[in-house]
Length: 222
Image (cartoon, rainbow, N blue to C red):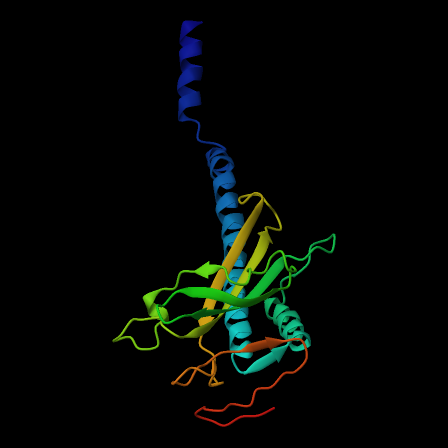
């Protein structure tokens, strides 16, 4: 009896049938996680590129003006959301997944930066408050050899996107993708009147819109 049990044990140890299936059952879950995770990560990276492109495009469109109306601003912010295609900009309930905020930041003679105006697709509560202080990097200085942010204006475009994975298997919840972009206004308005230098900014008004440049490499009007 003992010999029979010993013989069966030896045969069991030597039996290699279904080894491949066993190994597959062990490895398959890890491979599945890697595959799905790669797909979700790829989608996230692609959306992040779209977010950066949206931030750049909004700043680029706004800085082409010397003054811009509320209607024109809303048209720019609304049309910029199309850059996110083919990804959705609203969830199943109709709530917006993307928030675009554009602001003008100006500095005084000491380089102190404050918000001059701000507009957001999410309403006034999401926009920056006029007069709020800002901290600028030396990289925003017009002259890299003289890294001072005195007496300049910049257009700041900020975009956030709530990314929820389709499968939600490897990444749970909502991931907030965001990017911001500073850009100098392209045209000189020679204002304020006390300035003795070409002053570049974008006026935000409720009625008129113009992109006639007073000083620019290429004279432009629209």
